[in-house]
Amino acid sequence: MSKTYTDVRYEDVSVGMEIPEVHFPLTSQKMVMFAGVNRDFSPIHTDSAYARQDGAKDMYANSMLIIALFERMLREWAGLAAKIKKIGPFRMKKFTCVGNVMVFKGTVCSKYIDEQGNKTVELDVFVETEEDGTTVVGKSMVVLQ
Image 1 (cartoon, rainbow, N blue to C red):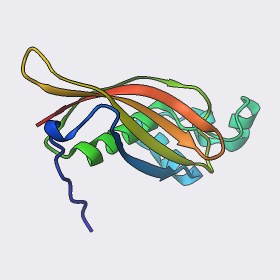
Image 2: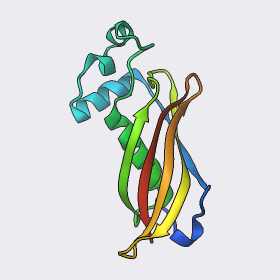
Image 3: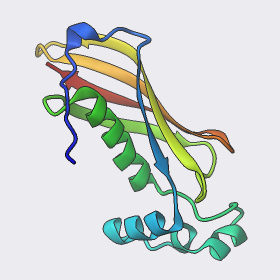
Image 4: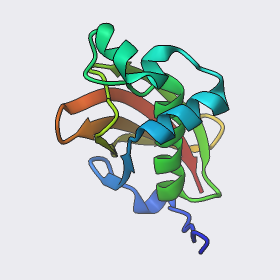
């Protein structure tokens, strides 16, 4: 089954609006597969015992996985016509470990039309888990139709 995307229009967005969440169960298999995709074979991301020796509860998500899932959340919300201008900066406040469901969230913090006429929306974005609360906080910028 393919996903249907609906393009969000600038006029339909308001400051304070929350965008739909994306839930991503973080499993060992997904971590190892993603390490292969982005060639980050650091054992903190692929070996539970090593990650525990490093002070984490288990192997944990790397920044490329976080960015990819922020992009997924933004694309599913904004649609295919939107231009994702920027993801970040973001800060990892806590480890986001295997065994948790990562919940990606966003809130519109500003909207404006820039000098080039781009209908720009800025968002506060973050990741939460049931076990650890907010683990990642950041910003993103999207240009809408």
